[in-house]
Image 1 (cartoon, one colour):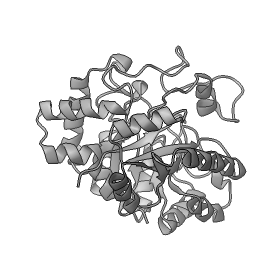
Image 2 (tube, one colour; image 1 turned 180 degrees about the vertical axis):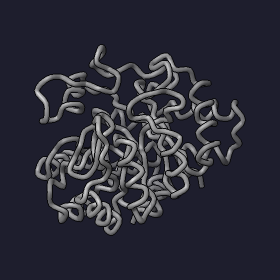
Image 3 (cartoon, one colour; image 1 turned 30 degrees about the horizontal axis):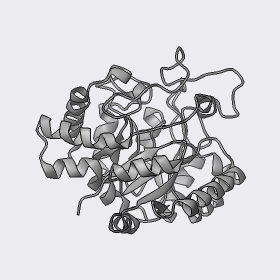
Image 4 (cartoon, one colour; image 1 turned 90 degrees about the vertical axis):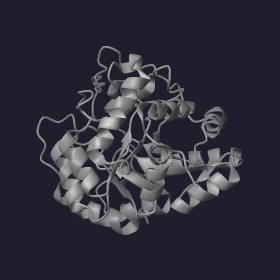
Length: 322
């Protein structure tokens, strides 16, 4: 059985987008539920999702384990897995790790670009690695079944997390820095260590992470996939598109600044263009999975390798979450 999984989307959710994901054949998506929200605000996001599940129960349901991905495929639906792009909802209380898991959280970044109570973000000048609190939270995340996600983390913090976690970690949405230099794209050192530990990299389709941005060519992306597979192996690479469909540009300010800054500080290489960048024409939305499949085939990947990259690797990774 082959699966299609996009392991990061942050869209302005609507029935239209759920229908697009179904048309794309996505059996599962990992969605960003919070960026900078505290625990109470997270509970409000859960209520909003409860309403979405109720209104679109013919298309989506809350996923909690890999078995729900199989269920989704059988029922022609998409399992939705909750994730955090920051550790804000656990505040400074380690007991909240188990609480957020009970409400469906299955992925949590230790930091979003900046220093957090747990680790250093990729936009900080000094990378002191995972903190004492971060070490304890990693143990607790391992215990309850939440994946450590280091997509927006700095290099030493990411390497620390790989070493400290008893379970494989994920970088759900980033690309290799050898292809495109961006502050949160990842070095070969991180890629190798991630693969050696059984972790997985979700390749991003967000324009600021792509070589030539919106004008990135499919052939270039697929060549990058091939080089990444040479480094990591074909079973440690997936897709985490970072799609932000139909989001108003004002959302960028919340993503970048949260409640910690008054001046606009957009980051992600977008200071001159603070809104969301256009997607490349071959990946306007999740239906672009079909184009990636064709591109990977053209560059020489076999069917098994393609199916692994487009979803089976994430499915196998999900088996180790609980």
